[in-house]
Image 1: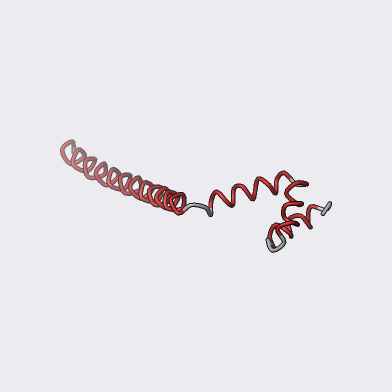
Image 2: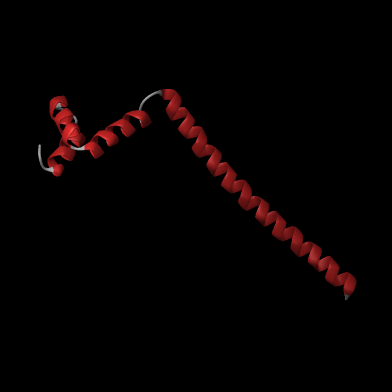
Length: 87
């Protein structure tokens, strides 16, 4: 369990809890990965909040794109009218 590759393989395999525990003791990055994985795959509420955040992000991006498109179209129409008035 001294080689990092063996530590990560034990972590990925996740069958022998004793081996995983030993690997986590020797590799702090592995321990942090376990904590993050448990956090992300833990409570249903956490999963739901992550899904809601992802949905909000996508809707925000779409609304910004739509607003830019509308602004550009409005600006072009206004510019045409001004050019007609001036010309």
